[in-house]
Amino acid sequence: MSDRSRERKVRGSRIQSSRDEKRETQHKERESADTRQTIRTGTDVSDQFVPDEQTFVETDAVRRMKRRLERWMDVGRPVHLIGPTGCGKTALAMQTARDRDRPVVWINGDADLTTSDLVGEYGETERISERDKYIHNVVKSKDIIRDRWVDNPLTLAVKEGATLVYNEFSRTKPIANNVLLSVLEEGMLELPGQRGESRYVDVHPEFRAILTSNSVEYAGVHEPQDALLDRLVGIHMDFYDHETEAAIVRSNVDEADQAQVDQTVTLVRRLRDRLEINVGTRAAIMAVEGTRPVDELDEQTFGDICVDVLASKVSSLDDIAGLREEVEAAIRETKLPFVDQ
Ligand SMILES: Nc1ncnc2c1ncn2[C@@H]1O[C@H](COP(=O)(O)OP(=O)(O)OP(=O)(O)O)[C@@H](O)[C@H]1O
Image (cartoon, rainbow, N blue to C red; front, side, top):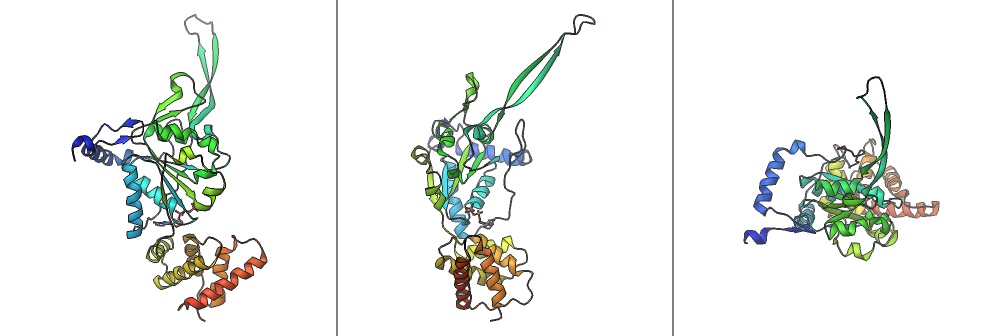
């Protein structure tokens, strides 16, 4: 492949470096990795929240999904991860973002988010006092009070060439997300509150975006505008395979017994098929955590643990009774060796 064909175009602006030069740049960046930061605090920014780094399990299934995501990152396309609650979207997005060796910016979608929450506002007032020091013992002071513009996460990410992880973006009202349209296509961010030249910001060529949404809410809460969806590559995720879920549980629960993890994952996957409510990987993690303090685990106790793990998703005592029946039936079917039947 000729060098020219290796040059990759990012929406609205061209990465000047060929793939080799980019590798060279990345190598240099890696050398100064300690200067790389997840933008938590930077110049003129309020503290940025980014989920803490966790042990990330990479089985074949996870690697395949991650590679699929990275391919689109490589060509500069924003990716939309869609999947049921607790299937692993956030963990995958965050690990892919971290592995890019670029700053990571996190935004949590919310119905109250406005455009200025995303891009910035004149959030602070600065008072500048000038004293006239040329005329002896005459003090003339002038206070200038000026609003100071504060960049918010999206502007930060666009300026720094960060990887933006916009979690549950469809919880944000579409009108607030409109500001993404020109970022993802024309490579230009418009700051509605700003004036003159500073109203427009060129998108850094290394800027990338991963948006996640919950399959149910995605269609429900705020149907995203088609113009935004049109700019996104969509990857639908489902729950991982048994081996991956068991590995995820083990990585999230210290010193968990392998057999108990396997059996609990089997049970949780069985309940996922039987119940109307969404049974995510977190349920398996919490069920194994719930058994840790128990010395002699019997069917009743394990049934209580599994009901507790899922009960917040049912709203009435009748539903709880139905849930318990399903849980107990699934425990009997799964013949859990560690549970004294
Ligand atoms: N590859 C992985 N390695 C380690 N833990 C993982 C991995 N994938 C998912 N998990 C864990 O499984 C649980 C659910 O994952 P995650 O939060 O990423 O799901 P989600 O689809 O983003 O959920 P939600 O829709 O609630 O945001 C979390 O506790 C997460 O730490």
